[in-house]
Image 1 (cartoon, rainbow, N blue to C red):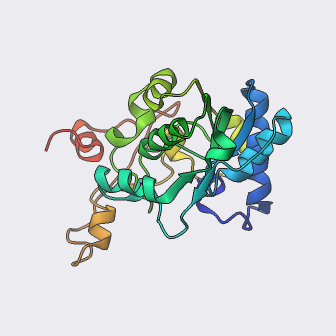
Image 2: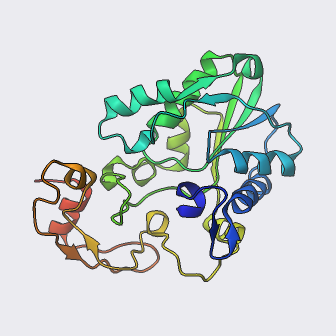
Length: 254
């Protein structure tokens, strides 16, 4: 997920330029999911390189459709739904002059909970977009990260609970396509490098902490309980957990 979202675009990971990798993701996404449209736009900031790549490969003009307030943090990491929704409205503002009457291809790096994307689509509709085609430059985000990124339980992850078509209906877009995992790896130029893709495949490389969360780490008393770990094993991207552990990890039961 460093290549997809977290790393600065001027970073070099595994000897590869993050910016160029993101542009290649967009180019591959255009080949994988072409569409008739008037304008390609990226969701600031990390969706922009992939949008540029999509526009280049598709020959659809690229333009800016959203202005970002740089002083608002990552909305999907906000601790409550109400805060996430409010943050979206403060973070992004549409450029009506570029959007009105246009069929848009909107390229974003990922969809985690979906709240940011759904609110953004509604803003684009309100600004006069006639069609919104969503393109995501990574595979569906289906599994929680336990290694420092607070994405909540699996029950909070949109793609863990809905099919792609159901997500399309929830987002209220004309079409939705995610970049395939093999295309993502090819775009990064790091096939076989061995970096973590657990959030996309469910295959966790090491034992995971059960009691570690953003609230615990950032609370006034720090980590308040002994950290427990549990190995996850499974084939074909399906993690197999004992029932009690699954209930704790994915928010079911007590």
